[in-house]
Length: 71
Image (cartoon, rainbow, N blue to C red; front, side):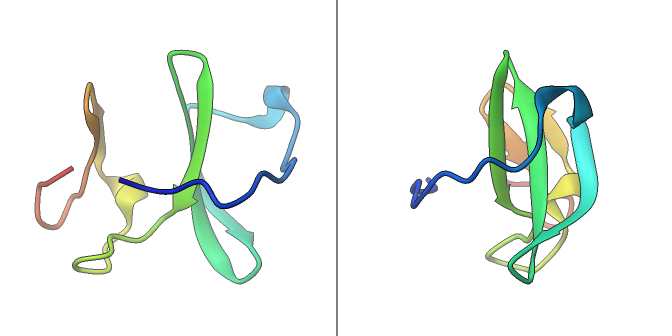
């Protein structure tokens, strides 16, 4: 589970695709995704193995890491 630490207006809605890649903010690579009309942004890095979460698959419960196949 991820904790929301703060909100930052990042871009306007028309510029967000289903999954946007190669977005950096304050030195961190981000994953932006829209699920059921809600926009989410997380660091694009698996905390367990360091893989790019943006390379994973979106499912009902979250995003499946492409390296260790867990949410």
